[in-house]
Length: 567
Ligand SMILES: Nc1ncnc2c1ncn2[C@@H]1O[C@H](COP(=O)(O)OP(=O)(O)OP(=O)(O)O)[C@@H](O)[C@H]1O
Image (cartoon, rainbow, N blue to C red; front, side):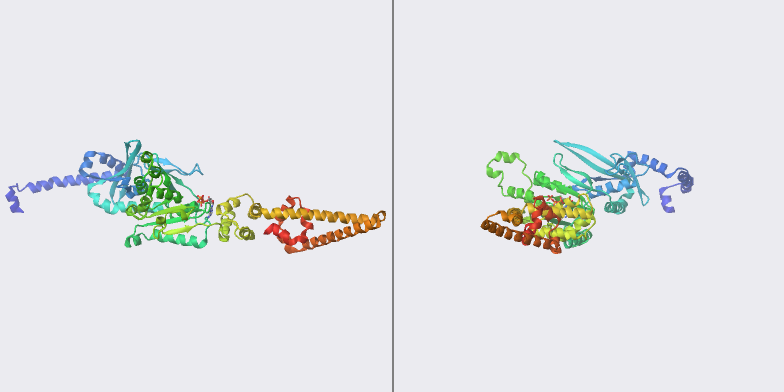
């Protein structure tokens, strides 16, 4: 060292004078630092720091900036989403503006929610690093569409760059994930064709697997399938498959297909992207729409049968082109093709995004293109059915909190007897009516019976009514004859002998017949089995036709009466 100094021709006392200068400066700095730390509170220190960090020159020298755009390449940027979710939870005094609002339509006094407004700064401290976030928005006017480019800037010291990448971003993503898993509000997005973007609103659908009535076995296996899917991200990676799941929900209108989509969303706590397939103009637009949905979300395409029929026609060039109107064909929207959709589902485009659940619903599975149904394309086919006894009990449980009433079985038996099909939506509509559970169920039972009469049993009722009329006539005749007989017996002396005999004979037989009828009717009235069978409604119906008397007196036609009412 001394030789080195000698070579440098430095004065020998230079080092000692350097130490002499350094010592008081470093002591002063330490004292100054201690004074600053002890006298200036941390928020004020943060403010000063943020002012200094605004200084472009200092930033240029010591700062580093990460830009996190809303879209990354062709898809939604999950880091942007993580920041969007995480930042409102770390708002501190240094944030000078905020967006505030509430979606709770039920409670005006509910606590408002915050989100980051454009230009606002949010400062975060992590492992001793100071990190400053700002949200930016650049308006871009392209043709008639107003596109805005949103992005976060994250500023930190240059020396923190690696630590931010390695520790801070995973921390933000992790926090965002747990916030999303426990979020109160889900969102539903609908595609706005005019400005080519998804628009969101709060998703408040109350349907859950508890309220949804479907075959218990099917429900159980669906829940199991969802659970497996949610926790097997790494398994999908291991087997080289994209982490996504497709469900095809089919069944007649009103069997709960849309309710099932909502129940799935509420169960997995995913946002829902609801796409009207018919509103998409081309494959390119479809690709754009689908890739701009976020990860861990549900894409629901309802009534896919309508969509794919159109796509199928287009695919085979049957619609516009066949009409030979080429000009019209070029000016019209071409619409997405079936292959465009399939490509997204399991072709190359399917790799855009992870954790997606795709749900197609249809009223008519048979109408679907076989390409959509081939094994492996939609992982799980869910058939939503007309009401079974189990489904009816579940509906009664969730709408009336009563699944033990005998009337439920009665209703179900009546439905089977009448050979009619009833959707859960119809049952739900009746069960929502006002009244005690018994009343509501009894009314629905009566309604079904009535419905049976009105539709399928109409011819039989008409036939029975004619027979009743005939019977009434006979009975009237018999009654008249009986009266006549008594009159004859009383006043018989006034008649010719032969005439008297004939009349008497006729009247007598009529009277006998009439009393036999009366006797039998009385017997039937006492018979509990028949009493039970001829329920209130049957009685009412007969009464409504003005035949109450007939009902009682013609019970000797027991089987026929049962037939009128029940078969
Ligand atoms: N399985 C069910 N469980 C509980 N409620 C149901 C069920 N099915 C239908 N509902 C009730 O009926 C209403 C309509 O049902 P939903 O819209 O889900 O049927 P859908 O099969 O999607 O009908 P569409 O094919 O006409 O769209 C729901 O709001 C719900 O109240």
